Length: 388
Image 1 (cartoon, helix red, strand yellow):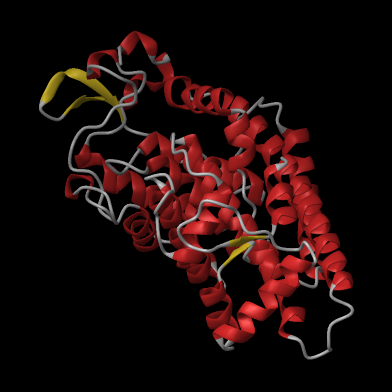
Image 2: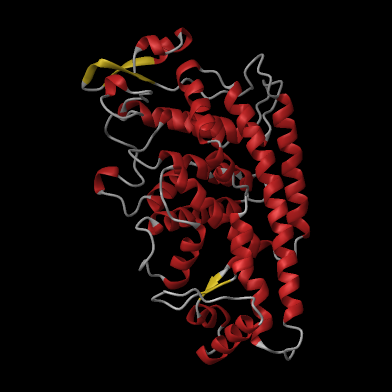
């Protein structure tokens, strides 16, 4: 990264890299506590907040919100990981979870499943605490440790990096961005924690930041600090639904929109890192929130229609038939095995097998060919999730 590529207003935040005195790195400026002056982002952020409230109202009235949320979380895991170049598809993640086997699946299926675990860890922590205070650096490190538990020891899962990092291929001199040296990371992260992760309005502040502005600023500041040796993008995207959950909103998953606009996403972060221009990112994130809320509402409503249709197809069975339990269960587990179903409902293998056969007969489940492990797909759910 050349000094000339960094805006003059950021030059005071450039330092010599540890052990590389001929190279400069950027120590992230203090986390913004207000929107940049003159930033024309009000419309996007206002529309995003309205969309969040629509999502909250929808979740409040959905009869099967937990199962639908579970499915959307896995969709997020796949899409966030795909931003980083993984190849696992949503159906493959569900198969991995159902069988605990990666036979025939992409090698990175495990990587994607670790994202689910890290997300569950973060959401569980803030929900149990019921406050933003639970979102501290210990939780950030714990999510990273869960996410990267299979990585080489040099990645230091759950620990801040102890080496100089840079973004871009090739030599550090040609990097597109060089974040802070290792010795500056802890101070930067402690400032981010106090200013934004545990955000609370201050008496001397005229304006407070909306939750949408908070997640936008927190994510971009985290990526600018780049605290870990690997996994920064995924960890940074984990922060956004966790922060919203801490504010009482349903988990909102943004990676699908960011994946579709990946180039604009990277460019907007670069505008902050090299020019401290927040407007492109705030506009992009505001639009992403609105789009993701509308998408989540549409998917949730469609999945409920699918479930109701399935219930109708089972109308001829006895009222106590195990098969009646499956339409709701399949919203959150659209790939199942007989053993998985038996364990989930505390029933015998024979009863689970009979229930699955009844759903296959009614074309609710299908059995793909050429699988070492017998799995059954709720194809209508999978198709709806892949549609947008």
